[in-house]
Image (cartoon, one colour):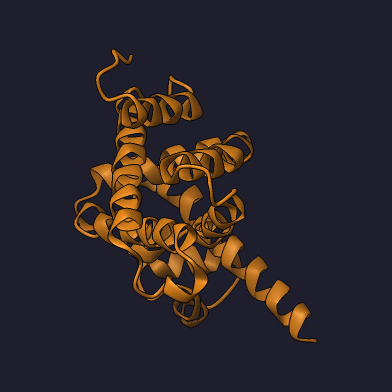
Length: 195
């Protein structure tokens, strides 16, 4: 019963997110109301607020951080920390990119160009950075990650944010996974010339 309830919640959350992005693409972020998103998804506006505290949260929140944390933790612990993050991210990104490219581009464009979202973008990045830190730390130390894990997590988060920014600036013309690989190359070989 609990499993069924969780599946229903997941379907509703996805329906709300898909409706929001469809309406943002058609009418713009500012002109899309919560009531309109809820109606498009076939739920009440009060149901919307059970899933997302604000309209901004539809764009700011994603479900990737827990997955990335687990993928990093599953990497061999003797592998260098930067390589663990890189391999984990690059094992997941191509499939997500292939499945959700347009939604990712719209979400990224909204984050970078909408003032209300841009001012809260740090929150979204903090979620990824924290997931990287936890994935790199022993489970017992995950609440207080060592400084080395924090530094690597911050550098990787900044590199990925830069790749996404370049992708949006190029209007999605370049392959995002390739840009992410270039960003990781720049971290691993800072002196090398890189696209």
